[in-house]
Image 1 (cartoon, each protein chain N blue to C red):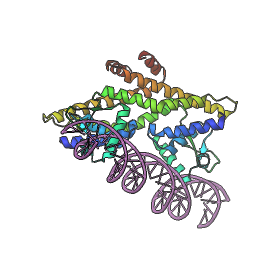
Image 2 (cartoon, protein in one colour):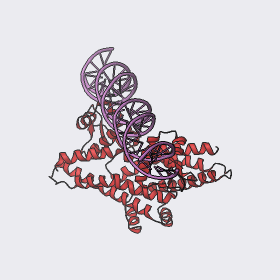
Image 3 (spheres, helix red, strand yellow):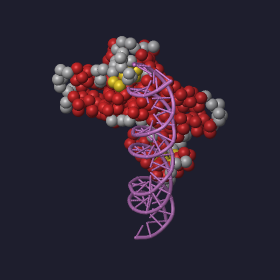
Image 4 (cartoon, each protein chain N blue to C red):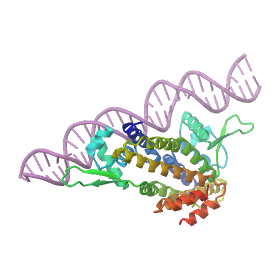
Length: 167
Length: 167
DNA sequence: ATAAACTTTCAATAGTTATTGAAAGTTTAA
DNA sequence: TTAAACTTTCAATAACTATTGAAAGTTTAT
């Protein structure tokens, strides 16, 4: 496998993986491309490399900026805008975890809390609804907490030692 | 909020959340319905409650069984098949985590490993590709490991004490 | 103030994924 | 063995999501 093959494989795999971390294909591919690029890329560069339209590129870059994963780079003397992504995987993971928590997990936790707080009318089905949604609420909250705590560690040593501890 | 409202809210929220854990809406809704039901439900019951077709119900129940989340229940004297889901949230989380790891994360780890193992030809861009995909490989592997280890704990105490430890 | 260089927007359309429903298949009871 | 009760399959289609491309908008240099 040479450079070009490896690059294509990485970009397309990361792209189709997008769904796993909740973003679309083009968005994930743009991020992947920037992630392995040695220098900031322009919209033109991205369009050409991924063979996607200008509009698509523009919209997805915007979304990546909303997520806080990609930033505009102004290169002196250049008219075009250039883009870079966060290069540190730890920081990247932290940003993604925080955003997903905020956008998706928190709202669900709220619904679970509301549903599990309905008045117990004494019927079996109500008791079951309360019991099960409460269990789900606790689990979701704990998992969300753990992910955020782990991912927020500036250093990696604690994560590694925890991993050993629970092996 | 009364029982019926709470139930609907839970089922539809859990349904739209499906994407978060990688399954489709109908599948997630069926699972949610079974999760709060006090007794096994027939295909008929599910179709009526969720207002979805027979075919859809059949296919999604099958998928839930493939995931190992839902099981057929045979009720003596009854001709119909009945279904139940795993009621213990810990066990549910364990099953889902294992399946997602196997179906989605493992293949990505493999690609990252392959890509980061290409021959270093000394160019800057090759060095960057290797460096970045290696970092991503390590992160993904560590995260996958941690999730599996945490979620495999039969008891919950260790998870809770870990959470305290890293707060 | 003008126009070239560039970016954004958004209606149209392509592409993908989910859902239906009816025919085919299976199981059970008599 | 027959037929009723039930489940599965799958081609057709509906619903949803992503992408295009050209017009509108913005910025910069002169």
